[in-house]
Amino acid sequence: MRMLMTVSMETAATNEAVREGRLMTAIQQMLAEVEPEAAYFTNDNEGNRFGMVVFDMKDPSQIPGLAEPWFLGFNAKVTFRPAMSAEDLAAAGPALDRAAKKK
Image 1 (cartoon, rainbow, N blue to C red):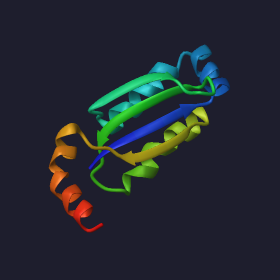
Image 2: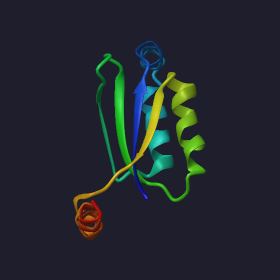
Image 3: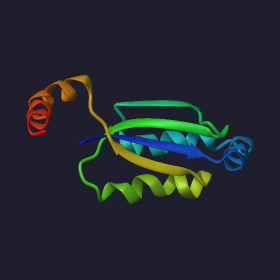
């Protein structure tokens, strides 16, 4: 299932990683584990470094192994949400129609 993993990395923890020269290496290693369809980085509303990673989750048992490095490395807050592409949403059209008619 396509998932959106968001990662809000604590500024102090990531600043330390930058100073030690390990931020980019750590992020690249964590992304290699996910094999993302896409990954984007920005800041969140609190000014923390923030990542959005779209990937295919084969089994929910992957969640701890994917989240823990972010927790341990950057004191991060991590969320996982199912995500649909435009094609997935279009395929859901008949189910939406059925739900609307049940009202």
